[in-house]
Image 1 (cartoon, helix red, strand yellow):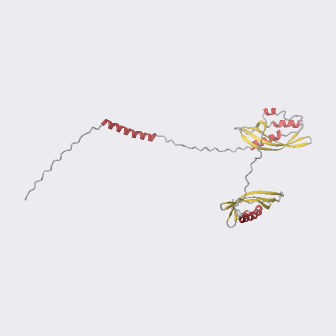
Image 2 (cartoon, rainbow, N blue to C red; image 1 turned 60 degrees about the vertical axis):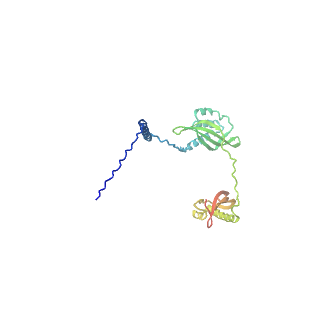
Image 3 (cartoon, rainbow, N blue to C red; image 1 turned 30 degrees about the vertical axis):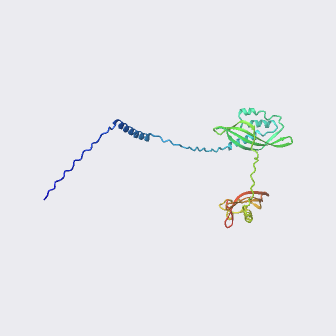
Length: 298
């Protein structure tokens, strides 16, 4: 038997490691900076104040002020102030009654407004309140108009005038006039004229005739019709029973305009009022829709 000898393994040479300087001071500085940054971030996270933009909607509730008492006070005052007879007893009575409405200063101011030898008498026909305006917590400016029947000898005439006064209202609701009736203007008729609408040709002649007949039938029935009878012509109670003694006369100047699948009708309807024997003209702005038959839907 041949014995083989193990070959000796060559010894590995130990690799030399070169140590490079670690710059300890710089590394420490970086660690301090890192730790400081983390700590500061945590601190800010706990102490930061969230800034939010808040949009506030301010709701102003309008308070409804009951001015009935003020209006009645001014109306009663006007009836006293603008009424007199051309005799001393009537003038003295008027002066005494005004003490219930005017401050002492205004009583003195009005001492000579009605002379002893005044040739006229005045009776109040009507007083209308046009505006009540609150000017501070206790004061209200009231605009009113008055119709006076002025008599001088055998001559009589109606005089219309408008004035404003200021009323003071205390905490108990008691009132006194602190500004003498002062001439002013009141609203007059506006010059506004609405645009007159005309048929624009979007509804053909055959459809126009159908709608005409439908409207005549409905408006003949309408004044005395019950809710059930109206429901055959009207949807969703857009026209309610009126129970009036009217007799249908005619349709006046109906205007037809197509609105999608519907038809807009503007029409005046003339009735005879059997109670007053006068003609009553009502104006309607209707929307009609055709299903199996025409219906008023709005």
